[in-house]
Amino acid sequence: MTNVFGMHPPQQVGDGRPTGHEQVVFCRDEPSGLRTIIAIHSTALGPALGGTRFHPYDSEDDALADVLNLSRAMSYKNALAGLDHGGGKAVILGDPGRDKTEALLRAYGRFVQSLGGRYVTACDVGTYVDDMDVVARECEFVTGRSSTHGGAGDSSVLTAYGVFQGMRAAAAHLWGAATLAGRRVGIAGVGKVGRHLVEHLRGDGADVVVADVSEPAIERIRAAHPEIDVVAGADALIREPIDIYAPCALGGALDDATVAALRATVVCGGANNQLDHPGVEKLLDERGVLYAPDYVVNSGGVVQVADELGGFDFDRAKAKAAAIFDTTMEIFALAEHDGVPPAVAADRLAERRMAEVGRLRNILIDGRGALRHADR
Ligand SMILES: NC(=O)c1ccc[n+]([C@@H]2O[C@H](COP(=O)([O-])OP(=O)(O)OC[C@H]3O[C@@H](n4cnc5c(N)ncnc54)[C@H](O)[C@@H]3O)[C@@H](O)[C@H]2O)c1
Image 1: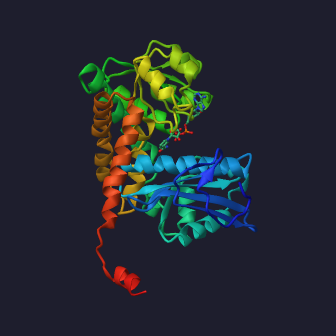
Image 2: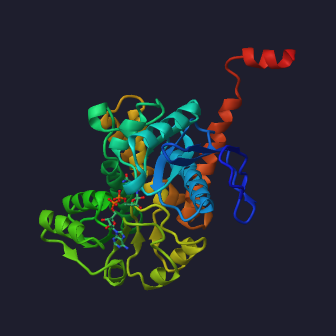
């Protein structure tokens, strides 16, 4: 890859295969130390929406590969969440603990603003609602701000709610009733999403067992729910006799070894990119494990922040996130009908909506532009 920070036509990455992105912009502001890459995968359904990841990448190529993958995934997530948004994402290269300053965030905001609304930013790993408040001082195309600034606040609230809806759908599909009552659910990672998920599950009468690498996270959940079990780590959780495994920590939770050892019959969790490599969805299928695709069931967060763009209304956003139940059911039905794993069925549904609804932009509403074009 080139190392030029400027407009860049990056239609290829890594192995040279086309990535299908519409636009990728490299931006740099030397005095504040900002280096950012903004990737717009698709605006077929509307302005590209996706968060800003602030991460100390080993190289610019790593950052580029990450932002291309993440932005593409947002196109699919936003399409199946029923949003009028395409997919985009941004990465800021640096250590958020060391490099994040007001000047850097505001410089970033100015670059997002310069895209004229083709990309709307929000929080992701390494950025928080308070950061979006700062970005918003330079930029109108930002969401996921704090509630004191009229924002939707912490998106993990509806992310967890959506994951719970996905689990209810899996239970309905597999066991004939949309409830987790009496089921044993293992949650790997009780951070923001995992913690809220515990509340939903306990409220529904499920038994819960958790694992986390952070002692404070375990202490917090133990204090709130002394009745739940704790095991030593995600590996131990996989070997536990559980009905549902919920990865709620980092990506790549499911690889050949974990699928082989897994005792759960359902996988449904909040983490992004749970499948370590292409083909894991087939392994799960072959083992008779029902996989609720990650980007479908964890879309409650983006539904929450998308709602903010029209003036945030929690009840309206929650009602939209509840539709994750129906979407997940539809994916399971399509997977059965087409004889493919649910992950493949989800991609098919997303691509169908992008094609069918995206195509509508070809219906001309304002003919003036076309006439001007014809005059030339
Ligand atoms: N927050 C959201 O709205 C949202 C939306 C969509 C997807 N997600 C995804 O959900 C996941 C969790 O997000 P979050 O906001 O709760 O993050 P978080 O940082 O608050 O929580 C993650 C938790 O996982 C734990 N963890 C890390 N590595 C672990 C391991 N190997 N085994 C067990 N636990 C481990 C951490 O200690 C932490 O407690 C991430 O993959 C994130 O990308 C979050």
